[in-house]
Length: 193
Image (cartoon, rainbow, N blue to C red; front, side, top):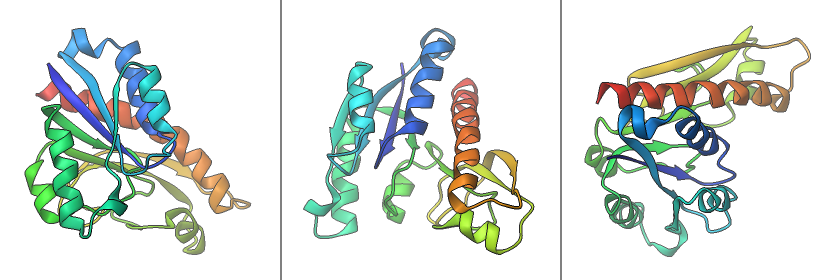
């Protein structure tokens, strides 16, 4: 079985989109794959309840309980490794991972970022796109490397930036595309394995 471990920090809407796609598209039969666990760095993350409702292991590794990024990443990796992941999927996981963690899951670690990378890595992507006068914005699924919001691009989707857009309205339109392309990109990776 190809186990998928999804990391979240909040509501987990991209995680839920992946779980629903796996159920709807029969990933277990098609790819021998399943979402085995959802792990959050925040106990109050809303996505944990959804995972539990779906019968998926839901675990917390609170980053505040560790004195260093390295110690947190080591504890996080120990939880992930219990599930023997074929893929580790970052879905709104709001922690910068250490190079050692990234190297541990090299080739198996994917992320989604709400911009058309390489444009606007980091935070506040929607406002930055509006401020720059962009006519389009979008979302990128990419393999994770040690450099923040870089790595080989697996999928992108484009949305228009409308004249009256705010960061919130643009974010909402981008999010609808995230929910489409992230499950597709994960399924594509599973198919190749």
